[in-house]
Image 1 (cartoon, rainbow, N blue to C red):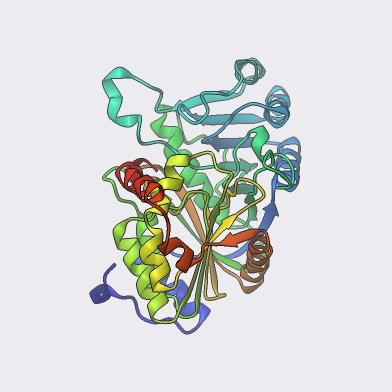
Image 2: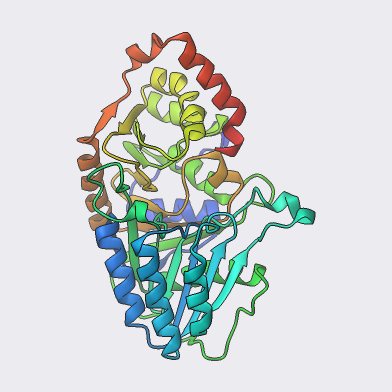
Length: 393
């Protein structure tokens, strides 16, 4: 989105909603409830409680399913419901979940759960290896859903107190938003060669459960560009006072960098919170550092989270709108992976997430523009290497 294509300046929450609808072609639904869950000590109990209460169906999609106690507990809860006659469908990305314990897979299969693998490795489909489903979705009884950034692994357990407990925010959702989550699950489920529609499913209208208006964007990166890029660029174009970005992997492309700089230069406070010394991707760190110089020069505020790996994926706009889901602010989410993003218009939620952001900043270090300008030659070499690897970051 260039200056010549700039969106109209919004003034009310209705204006923000209409800007998103006009740019992305997906209407908002009203009457939703969105509850943020901060860190694994709150996320996993809420998800497992919902699974244990299932009466009819469970649809579960994840990019990461690794090892650890939570992986065993999650598998056991799904298997118990399958044995009890609940229709359980489990969809796993073949790359991200390759470390899943075989014992858990066998437990689920023996209990009667349907298991599918998204884009399993095949020599004759080598082009698919680089395009994954990065979505994280849990839907119980077609009435309660979860999405966000959490993976099923020991790294997410705990309360972000040390490097072994990652910082994450996930979301519990009810209301008409569930239809969007279900559509995102089904699109990947069907691509994985499974039947998608069954008579047992209820197609009655979703009940209204809260005051949030939501827009669900599900993207499939088939041509090295997706609506995630449109969404992030729209945010930077329409913002009037502040944009707050929290992301596990910060590697914006050249056009997004230009929009971030332009926003800061017109007086918008642009803040980016990203991992600091603890990260699971040094490539993403190096590629992100290559973008620092122009951003800092334009006045963008960059922060690095210190206690542990920061994995949250949240964008806040003008205290009016939040974008949550599975997408990072990087090349992969904007052009390679299947993602889900939920735009939410609700003042109370945006205020709560902004308070969480403020708290995270107390445990982060700001990148000093003057010190960065004096960085040494080795750091500059790292940045050049990161530039070459950025399409994979």
